Length: 165
Image 1 (tube, rainbow, N blue to C red):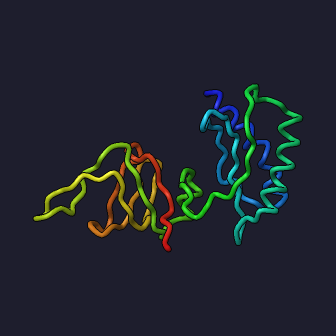
Image 2: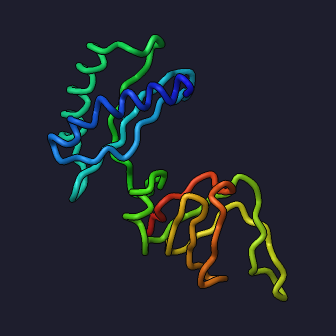
Image 3: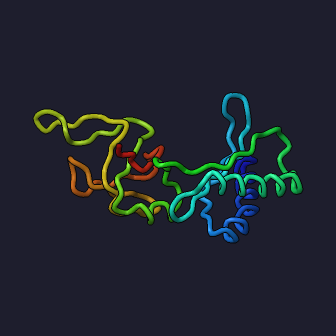
């Protein structure tokens, strides 16, 4: 287990009782370096949507817990945030909840799909479709070019809910 994975797992374990106490959902925890700073970030949600006051409540309690545990040696910024409208799907519960929703699937490298002129394939870095099914190995979406299009999850860099305006 890497240092990052250890920090994320410990933070998640620390936050779980707080989430249960307030009927919040812990969507994700990440420990990342951005613009030269380390961030320990929790994404939380609840039925009907998370509020700024909810995020503040979690942040204050979590900050106190982190001060008491003090398991991260590096300086870091602690953040609590909403997962946002275009949330990334990572865990099984995310995929299960999103069946029937439109998703944007981004690939690590270009992928050939039907859709070019005269039936030729084109190479794309991203496709959008309705999430039909998932397994640990694949996701299946309905697209304009295929009623059931299966994609190996090893080829996928991100899956996010589509934001419609």
